[in-house]
Image (cartoon, rainbow, N blue to C red):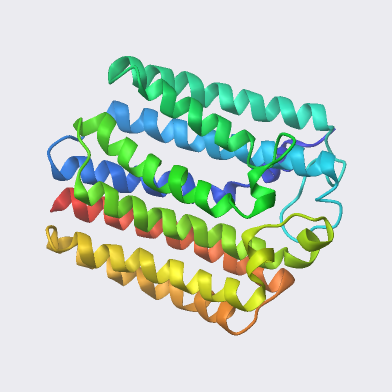
Length: 289
C-alpha cells in the first residue's frame, strides 16, 4: 500500500505548472477584452489540473505494466517501484479523468455543447499518450500532444469559455505556454534517453539524439519569449513578461553545457517554475493592459 505522500509524489505535482500557466494566460487574454469570469476560470483550472494529474497516473500505470519504469531516474513511479498495484494506479487515473469530465461538462452546459467533444479529445489524448496497444508517446509524438492540449487548447479554451471569442493574444499566449510545456517534456525525455532507448520507447529525444534534443529545448524557450514580443504589439504592458526570462538562464545553460541523468532533475523543476511564472505574468499584464 502506497502512503499518502507517495500518492502525492506519484501525481507529480511539479508538472502542475503545465496546467496552471495556460489557464492564467488565457484568463488574462479574456480580461483584456473585458470577458473575465471568475467561476468559469476556476472550472477551467479544475479541468486542466485534473487532466494533468490523470495523465501522470495514467503514464505511471501504462509505463509500469510495460516495464518501461523498471530502471528510471527521477520522481517516484508507483507501479514501477511496486509501492502501488497497477489496478490501484489505474483507478486513480480514472478518478482524476472523472473529475476533469464533470468540470468540463459544467463548462459545456454554461458555454457550448460542442466543448464536450474537445474534452473527450483531451481525455483520449491523455490516455493514449502511453496507453493502448500503440501509444503515440512511444513514437515521438508526445511533444505535439503537449503543445496542442496544454498549450493551444488550454489557453484558447480558457479565453473562449469566459469571453466567448478567440483572440490573437490568446493564440500567441497558447503558443508560448505550449512551447514551455514542451520544454518540460523535452528535458524529461533528454534525461531518459538511455532507459527509453533500452525499453524501445522512441520518444522525440531518442529519435533526435542528445545534441539536437538540447538545441530543441533552447529553441522552445526562445519561442515562448518571441510570443511575448508579438503580443506586446497590441498590448505593450506584456513586455514586462520578458523579465521572467532571467530564471530561464540557469536551466538553459545546464542543458547547453551537457547536464545528464540526475543533473537534469533541477532543470525539470526550474522549467516548470519558469512556465508558471511566465503564464502568470502574461495573464496579469494582459489583464492590466
